[in-house]
Length: 110
Figure 1 (cartoon, helix red, strand yellow):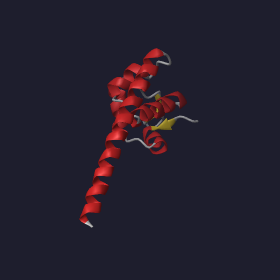
Figure 2 (figure 1 turned 90 degrees about the vertical axis):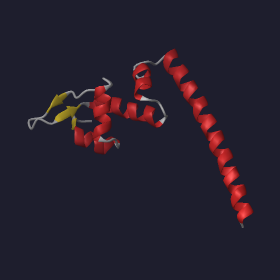
Figure 3 (figure 1 turned 120 degrees about the vertical axis):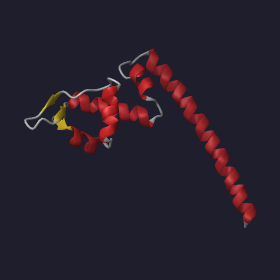
Figure 4 (figure 1 turned 90 degrees about the horizontal axis):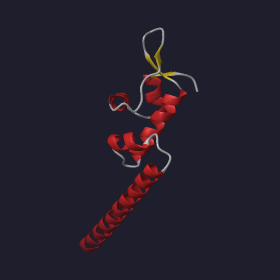
């Protein structure tokens, strides 16, 4: 990958400019340079880090949680992933129950 401007990174990864600014504010990522027009540039490592942050957010982690786990590949990350998996499983069960209730209500309306 080549160095990309903020706009290019946003487009390629599917994150907003504001999201990346939030990542920078939380010291999760930073621009790695500027081009001749003064636009911020992000190298391959920064782009991969942004992808990783977005993945963790999609999993339901907050930026504060991501800050604790992003550079870990051991027990801290493992425990966080186990806890998040349990949380998501509970949410799935709750939503499945709500879907069944709605289906019953709809059936009774027919």
